[in-house]
Length: 294
Ligand SMILES: [Zn+2]
Image (cartoon, rainbow, N blue to C red; front, side, top):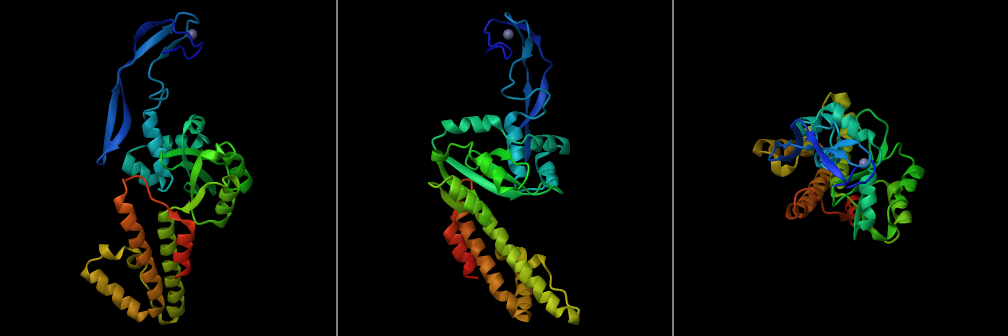
């Protein structure tokens, strides 16, 4: 251990901190807390005092750094209220985590990695404008939350990443993101996150439903939305019957429904085999082929 102010190793015990509980991780839906018993130290050279364990938990935070990283990661594709409910982390804390735009520590570690798997997404954090987020997908770490969704801002950030080590760039289905990824990382494989593909096929399904509904508006008929977006295997017999009846009434929706189910089962079969928390990626060309076959 060294003094954080001057780097000296001439340190002396200077009492103990009050024991404190900090949220550290989650296991089977339960929160796991650590009770921290820490010492206070005094530097023999510069005289400053400090607490040990700052690499584990930031001063004044009630979450360990690991828990902060996980919460930030969860915010990537969940809403504030979902993350708050599921992780039991307050709104103020989540806001604070998002305000830090780039994780210098995570960026600093990148040159040490053998291989880097980047994720680039367009994201809107509740009622905010669109921004780009950059993540390390395998390590589940948020690297940067950019201030806006301009490609110039994104390109500038990406230049900080050691280009030769990037093996894969996982993007959502935006053409502009693909172009930047190919330009900045010419040696990397550009792939689409399969969950974006599922979301996209759901969106197409719902669009078709809305159009169909508009056509039938004159007959004052509403076509239900939710039942079409639920995976077929999750429906009970009654639900399956309802879908079949609706599709028979609106044959124009059939091909969208079939395509959506095909994509879901194709992806889910592959995701199931992988360890939880890490998604497999679908080559861009393959996902484009699936979409074009609709
Ligand atoms: Zn010192």
